[in-house]
Amino acid sequence: MGSSAPEEKKGRLTLTRQIMIATVIGLGAGLIFGEAIAPVKVVGDIFLRLILMGLPLLILGSVTEAVGSISPKTLGRMGVKIFGMFIFTTTLAATLGMAIAFIVRPGAGMPPMDLATDASALDVPLTEIVLNFFPQNVMGSLGTGNLVQIILFGLFMGVATARHIDRTGDTLFLDLVRSANKTIRGIIEMVMKVAPFGVGALLANVAGTMGAAVIIPLLKYLLALAAGGLMVVIVMILITSTYCKVSPIKLGGKLLDMAIFAATTTSSALSLPIKMKDAENKLGVSKPISRLVNPLGMVLNSDGQVLFLSLAVIMISQFFGLDLSFGRLLQIIVLATLATLGTPGVPGGGLVVFAGLTVTLGLPIEGIALIAGVDWFRGAITTVPNVTDDAMVSMIIAKSEGQWSRDIFDGNCEIDDEGEVVDHCDHFDAHEMDLA
Image (cartoon, rainbow, N blue to C red):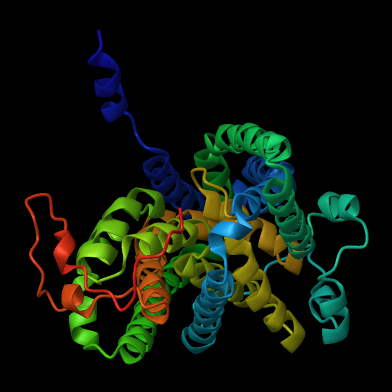
């Protein structure tokens, strides 16, 4: 009796495989039936509405929980360093993603589609875009799905929550937010169960309208994403090796195990234990620094995710023949960077946030179908910089705090049977700090 359940789970198709199968069926049906397949689009439209239904509350709750869970006393003076590095790496990834999208142009060359999108809404003055970062009424922001305003309010609420807990020890509000987040994630999980039908229907309509040419942008998109992920990791290796004065080739080799694990699991959460262990036993990061920075990075610093968001938004604008102003390009970088704070921990969470971004930017949300069809491959690519960059940030922070061991990095310390560095080899530049 006890072994039957796991066997049933093994025999089931995962959501990712279902979406991939639906992608093939949808593309095939669209190519076979052409424009006659158009009525099935309503199924996809319903799916998109269901995704967006709970997204504003999910983003607000996720950001509030992530920031509100961080104790000001725990972070201390390192808070500026940690968050400064997170902002730097995510902004770097967003900028690289956008640059690669303009160089490769994965969505360009398609015939125009008949869309209800008002292209003039994309041409907004920079001053108005900056002003619109700030909510006038958070309820209105939730109602319109304005992602950047929701995230900004979530940041304020998270900081206020953390300060309240620090002063009073009262975690009631944070507990309520966590409970609400679990409930809303449950709604998203229910919606994602019908994702194969929605994605298949949307892609059938796109293929029926555009024909076989729709396949080319998907291949170019994955190649551009892979190139971007590699560039982000290489740039971070060069920055880290320069600051810590180590060989970039040697540093890259020490990141290999966690990179392979991240790509095969496509999960930053599952990669956290090996990321922390390798940061401590291969990179020379002290345990207090590693066990503070790496879990925070998993929640707040997703370079692969922000690379995907910025590249995919540009691709969709190219695909539908929409021109973006300089102000909109700046907004994409800021939004993609901030959106990593609100990536929900549910299956297809990246797709959910991407859908919210397209609404905020005034882009056609039908573009989510193109991205969803190859999302497993996207996950395999983007999880690598998500994980490796966190480890390198922890190494930089450790070096700046005198908590980095060159002896461990150089492999001069004895490793016990459990793969742990023995205590007398922890030659840090300063005494270990009490960050617990």
